[in-house]
Structures are given as C-alpha cells and as structure tokens.
Amino acid sequence: MAEYKVNLIWDEEADVWVATSDDIPGLVLESGSLDALIERVRFTAPELLALNSNTHGNVLLFFNSERRKTIAV
Image (cartoon, rainbow, N blue to C red; front, side, top):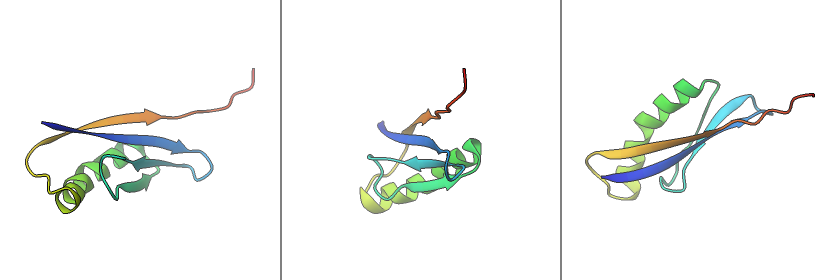
C-alpha cells in the first residue's frame, strides 16, 4: 500500500493550520481547526492523487503536525 506524507503546520500569523505535501502535488489547504483540516485532506487527497499520479485503490496518509509557540519564562 502506498504511503503519502502530509505536513500540518500551524501558521500563527494567519491563525490557521496549513496542510501541504511533497508527495501529493497540488495539496495546499488551510483551516482554523486541526480536525477539520484532516477531514478536508481526507476528501481532497484521493482526487488529487487520481488526477496527478494515476493512483487508485487504498493509500495510507501519514499526518505529521507541528505547532510552535513562544512563551515567556
């Protein structure tokens, strides 16, 4: 089964989560909620994979999330 990595990064300036992937051409999505963003990726990725890489059948999406926050100590 093919595996595709999706990066989920918090954009503090825009106050949204952003999803991108080097493995899925054209995948750039954003949402204020991490759960909502993952759902958007679940529905968008199959279409992009079918259009751009002729991939069909089941694939595994690996979500890698990162959020950094500056705090005072």
